[in-house]
Image 1 (cartoon, rainbow, N blue to C red):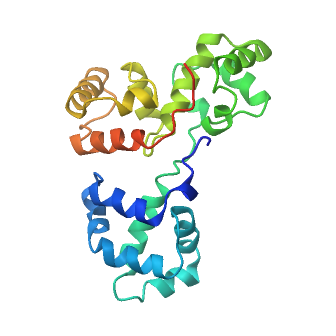
Image 2 (image 1 turned 180 degrees about the horizontal axis):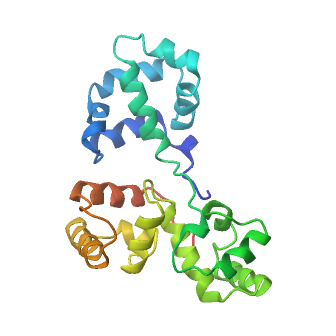
Length: 224
């Protein structure tokens, strides 16, 4: 296990079943269409797992070849690849989190830690966090805060701002997100956004459902 989900362990059949019941934004609802036919074809050409599917779709010649198959299309494959890639979210830069002092960031950067993926392996156990705090001179509570922000950053579509909102609400770990009630979290998140004037508009209920569903798929490795 690690920062990311092990995509090699997700079979094509598992992913098809996941898409069947997944909460998806309107722009990706095409992924629910012709599931048996499309994934049956992908299996027939030897694709066994999600990792293999991503690798195949990233090859331009293979992508072009697949887009000519009757049950597939370029538009469908493009959206499928976007959805697949979202399971491997880009790490958040530690320096972008508000409330973390420049001194703390500088100390971490000095030992080669600039983003959440790089920090992850150093904070999994409490003893790891204590060792990092002792070796860098960073306060343990600051390390713990960054640990939780790192944990939240493992969820797809959770950028710096979203992670900070969840942390400030006390929904500060992957496990707590996964156990949240959608309607309650939706209300709390949008109330917080409005009160703090973080941005205009609201996060939709479906987006919250996607967040919670994504959190349930992430291994709970960090010990608190």
